[in-house]
Length: 474
Image 1 (cartoon, rainbow, N blue to C red):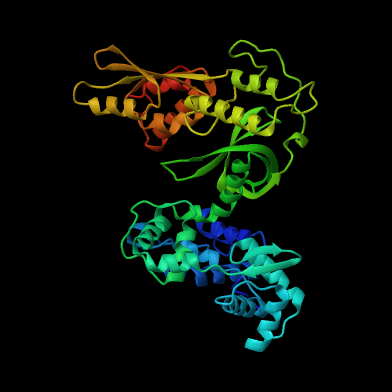
Image 2 (cartoon, rainbow, N blue to C red):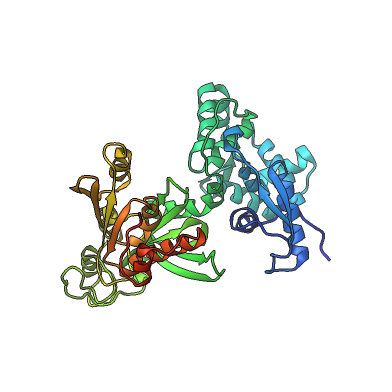
C-alpha cells in the first residue's frame, strides 16, 4: 500500500479536489461514492492541510461535512492561492532548482555541459548531462531562464533585472498587493510578493470571488487562443451528472456575471452554427486546433429566410450570413482565419444587445422571444420600482398604460433567463405574456408552488391559474 502524499503532480486534480469539497457541495464520507472511503480520507487530509485555517467541520446525521469559512473583507490574500503550491517534486527537482539558479546568479551565460561541471566543482553534486539539460529547457519554457543559441552552442542565463527592480520600487509593490486581490491571474502578484517577502498591509476587498483562481489555468489557455485567433477543442464535465463531452469552437470573449461571479467562455460552434457559452468551471481541458480549415465542414448555406423562420434551429440572420461567407460548396472555409475571426467577433458584439444573460438560443422557432409584463406601481410612493425597471431592464421599453399601471416589454434570445428577475416583482405583476409559452407556464407553476408552500387559500386568482388562464399575482 502506497504512503499518503500531501502533494500531487497535477493541478487539474487539485482543482477537482477543492471544487468537489467546497464549491459543488460539502461532501461527507457517505456522499463520496466515486472512489473508495480511503480515497476520501486522503483527499480530506490534503485539503485540511492546504487550507487548515479556513476549514470548518459541521456534524450531521450522515457524518461530518467539510466547508470553507472565509470572510474576504478580513483577508489580505486569496487563501485558495495555496493550491498552486501543492505540486509534488523529486529530490533531484529541489536540489537542481536551487543549485542551477545559484550557479547562474552571477556567472553569466553557460552551456549545459558547463552547468553540469559547475554543479560538481562548486557544490559536489553529480548529475547526468541529460538530466541537467531537461531541467534547463523546462525552466526556459517557464521563463525562469533565458535560452539563446550562438553558433552551435545553446546558452542558458539568469536575468535578475526584474527582481532587483521590484525590490527597489516601493510603489510597484503596492500595485502588486492590490492586483493580487482584484485582478485576473492574481496568483502572479501573490507569487511576486512572496518572493519579495512583502505581505499585503494596505488592501482588503469586500466582495471577492476566490474560486476564480481555480479556473485561471483554463482561462490562460483560452486567452492565448483568442490572441492567436485560433480554434480550440474543449473537454467539458457536467456538474449535474458528471458526464464528459467535447466541443470544438472558436473562442471569442469571456463573460463575467457581476451578480454570481461565474465566468463563461463565449465561442462560435460551427456544428450548430451558433454562439454558445460554456461555464469556465465546467471546462476541464483546452487543446488548441492549429489549422481552422481542418475543422469539420459546414453544411451548405441555405437561403436567407424571414425572421422567425429558421427551420426550428433558432439561428439569427447574422449567423446564417456568417455561415454563407465561411464556406464554399460545403467543403470547408475559404476565408483567412484572422478575417473569419474578426467577422465572428463583430457579429457577436451585435448579437450581445439581444442577450439577457449568456444564452443565444431558445426552445422555439423564433429568432427572438418577446416578453410583456404589466405591473401595478403606486405613484408616487413606489417610483423606486419604476427606477428599478429602468436600471435593470437591459434595454426593455416601459410604457405608462394608466395611472399606477405600467407595461414592460423586451425582446431577447432566451426569456428563461428573465425568470429570476421577474419573480422579484411578485405582488405587483398584473399579467405576464411571452412568445415562449413554456416560460409563461413555468412562471405560473412557480407561483402556484409558492401558494401551496405558504398555504394560501385558493381564490379566484389561483383557480384561473389551475385552469391554464393567466391570473394576476397581486
